[in-house]
Structures are given as C-alpha cells and as structure tokens.
Length: 531
Image (cartoon, rainbow, N blue to C red; front, side):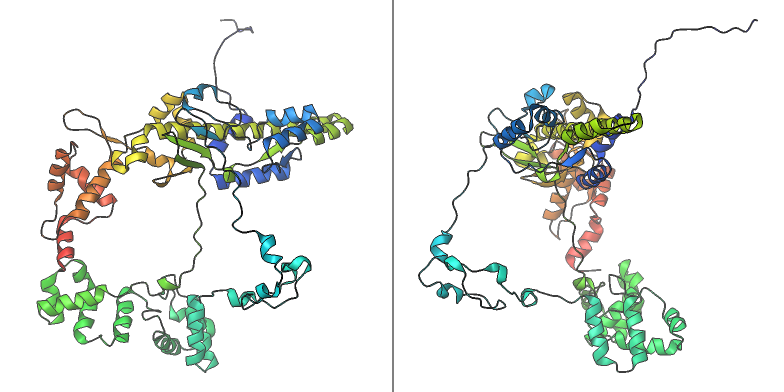
C-alpha cells in the first residue's frame, strides 16, 4: 500500500471555550463578595476601566452630561451596559430582556414608584436661629465641651471636642477578665508569667488546650509549680475555666457552688453511664436512691460546659443579599437587584482614544486594543450576569408563589431542569446562578438553592410534596406532642398519610436525624425529666 499525502475537507461541530466565555461562566458562580474582589483586581490591572461615579445622578442629568461630552462617549457608555439604569422586565418578556435591567415585576403593571422626597421633621433654621441660641447650647450632653455659637446661631460642630471614650461601651474579653484577676491574686512575677501562658492556652470554650508540661519546659521551671498555678487560676471567674476535660469543668463549677460531694463526684466519674441513661448503674455507682439521682442529674444539666461562651465577642459577618423581593401593590411580587452588590464600572473611551492616537509602535497599539476589548467584554459579562440572576430569580418566584404567600408547608418540589426549561437555559447555568446567591423575601432571607427540593409522592396520585415541606411537617408534629403521647416514627407515618403524604418510616427517621431530633424513646425520657 502506497503512502501518500492528500487534503480532505471535513465539517464538524465543537464547543470552543474562549477566554472570554470562560470569564463569563466564572462570573456567574461568584458570590457578590468574590465578584467585588475580582472587579477591583480588573480595575487595578486594566487602565481602560473606571468606577462609575454617577450612580446617584438622575437619568436626565446623566443624559445631558453625555450630550456635553459627545455622542460617541454616551453611546459607548450605553453599549457596555452600566448598571445604574433601572428598567422593567416582566416575566412575559423574558425572551426579549431589555438592556441593563435591575428591576422586574411579576405581575402586569408598572414598577414600584420611587418614594418622593419626604419633608424634614423640623425646620432647622427656626431652631438654630432662635433669639436666645444659648438656651439650646445648655442641652449639650456631657462629654462635649461648651463652645461659643457661630454665625447665624448654629453650633460649629467642626470645632466640637468630644470625649469619645465616655460614650463607648467596652466589655472585657475573656483574656482581659482573667488577667485582671491574675494581677490581683498573684504577686510573684514567675507565677504571673506562668498564669499568662495558661491564659494564652485557653480555647474558645475556656478549656485548657495545651499541656502544662510544655509551659514548664518553655519557662524552665518545675512542672509542680505550673500545676500549683493551674489550681489557683481554676478558682477564677467564670467557674469552670481552665478545665482540661468535661468532667473537670463540671467539677469546678460544682465546687464553686459547694455541691461537689462524694456522690456527685461519683456521678462525674460515670458520665458515660449518664449518656447511656443507665439509671441502675448510676444508682449503684453513686450510692443514692432514684429521687436523689434525679436531683443530681438536674444539677448537672444546669451547668455550663462552655464557661467562656459569654465572653466571645466575634463579629458576625453579615450577608448581603443579591436580590430584593417585596409585595407589589397590584398583587404578586416585585424583584430588583440589590444596588449595593452591583459592580459599577465603565469603559473610559476618552482615555482609550487619547492614548491610542499617541501610540507609536505596533506592540503598543495591540496592547491598547487588547485592554480595550477586555474592558468591554467584562462590562458586558457583568450585565449578562445581572440579567441572568434576575431572570432565574423571577422564575423561582413564580414557581414558588405559594411558599411566599402561605409559608413553608406550601413549598413545591422543584429541580434545576424545571427552571432551565422555563427560561430556556442550560441546567448548568441555572446551577451556577443559584450558587451563593441570596434573596430577601417577606418570609426571610434564603439562598436560591433552598427552593430546589426533591419530591415525595402523594397518596392517591395527587400533587407531589416538597421534601422541605415534609420535614417542616414532621418537626411541627414532634413540637406539638405531649410527654404522655410521644410520637413514634410509625405514628408519624400514619399522620402524614392522613395528610396525603406517602412516606416510608426510614425516610421519616432520616429527616428526623437531619434535623437533630432524637428518637421517641429519648424524647419521652427528656420530657418526663427522667434518665
């Protein structure tokens, strides 16, 4: 067989993931915090991008400003889709979404009108232009120095000297609280140094996380001296701090209450039997009767296994929602993108035109054009991301309208395919959009993923029930049960079938376990106050 060269024409289809397409896909799944960080990086690297500082201007003012700077610049700003324009996007018109929407109505009718400027509660001119302005100065709160009145009878707040420390509320941390006691109780400098090391070894619960022997080795002192200091600091407030395990933590608190008798010590030494609810074993180990044991157990349960919990002052990071939802005056719901999470960037066409005309080499022109195209693509990708999020959220609101109106019991089964088919997008796109995106609703704040739940069949072939709604129903039944009639899993199955929910007992047990609800036997013991 002869080997020869030839040319063949073949027609094939393939998906090419260009860098621009990869960037657009990446932006979809970013949270608003991650998106802000990404945009800031792009602003630092790309000289063609700039912050949009006109977010507070009226549309008419911006239009006039655009006419003054030239039609080319105004057109460019519109083309890249700046996000401070507000438009409507009815659900019926999702196939033809207008450029740059950040608001949409789920019912026919106009969007919510902007609130008119409200009058001030008082006329400041009448207050500060009083004939005797010094009467007003008499009411200056403590902590502020009295100053002469400025022209017009107004307080010159620019010259006000405030004692800010007098207005602050400073709660001590656990370390500060313990250090104060250490300085008062211990005079020896070595003991204080050992105590400081012990304080630094505490975890968030107030337990000692390290080994005293390590402190002795570090400081070059006997282990016995470290143990002596440890016994001293274990008497500090709050009771139970510096414990090395749960038994010691509870013992320190009982000792502070003068309740650490031999029977209670025996109970602490057999906490494993208490966890197993072995009443007979505990009675034998403690040498008490059933009534005394019940009282001892009540005392143990009243103790705090985390004595330092009241001293935790961690700042909770608030979550900024991506979508705001509110009832529409004409019925239905109004959705809008949260303006605080929308990155406002524009392409600086004026700067591009200036430096592109001054470029001398081919390499400079290629770099300038590449940066300009990258800037345009980024802003368009941000616009597409906002449009897609609003589109998906709008369809979810339509599908779960009963939930927003009546509560979690009316949450419908929903999967990604349902939304994807309704808005003619791929499931992977819907999955990316609903990841780390939050919506504020009259029912609370939810991640968009929350509204996607599996289906549980209905008795008699009726409409399926959402798994989340079934979990809510199970929890409601257990919360309403009485100590005399604790519901077993089989009984819960019977009650759910009466409501038309076809569910197996093992599914009830799985849902109950996911909600950290104990079994009927443990609940009966807990509610009756017995082991």
